[in-house]
Length: 340
Ligand SMILES: [Zn+2]
Image 1 (tube, rainbow, N blue to C red):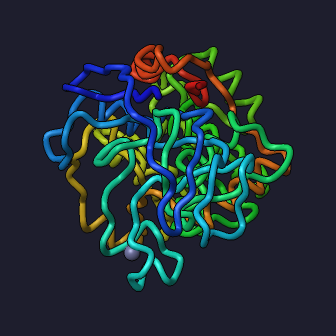
Image 2 (cartoon, helix red, strand yellow):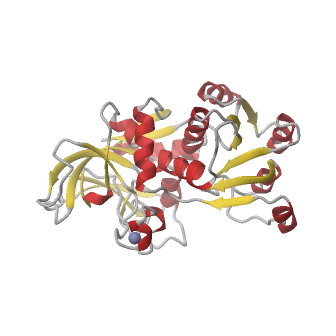
Image 3 (cartoon, rainbow, N blue to C red):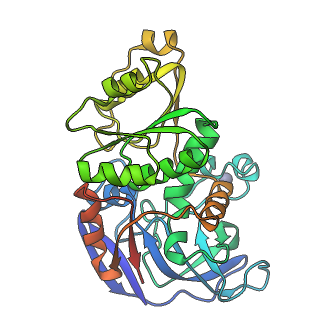
């Protein structure tokens, strides 16, 4: 079977490897049909000095497929069922796992496709507890965007920032995979949405998604425009995943007591924060990473109800690197899908 492996920084190889054995106790075997790309894949591809991992590594952190076979003890799945997979090897028995806070597992074995082997292969055996059924009517291409893009956004907006109907939110990079999902989720809640994009063509697309105001951050300072749009009050929530110099500008966009939730730092991981501003303005800053299995189920329900992901482009497995280049170029609007 095919297996796409990272063999060195920025070097992928499509290998022919033996198929996995029959699924063991509590496991199912899945045929992968679609992998969705995220910025995480780009970090992994470029190489990260602080990430503990061994090469070669099967890439792919977010995917959907079909059940091929189940082990004797597994109930709830049968061959042919469409499924998505949780993207981290959690333990299933620590307090966090038992309470459904999967992304806080105390014994997590790593992120699939980043620390440990991922989904860019024809077949995989996984514990059934990490497998989530796809509702009928949802394509595997769309379902592939649920575990990371939708799940992460769901966790950020609702578990962490606790976004409420009618609030105002600033969504950074509305054309990115998670940014486009955040616009859709906030719109469905009846929020007022301000978003940033890097060019005017993306501005039109962001408006079509439901953004009320779109700021081209290359030609305007987003913090100034945001304060003007909110009559100097600021927004309730900032959806952040860019970091770098924009982070402090994002804090300036918040109203007193506002919440900033972040899951990324594509523009740089270190910033200096004015603590007096932080406590006087009573800002709440949430770091968010990944999602719970419940978040992924909820995401799939939203997709089934019509909240489809925006698909930027689709590539064959052999062209995985072209998909990564698309994300790296920042021309992307929505999700990049790898088809099997
Ligand atoms: Zn655990």
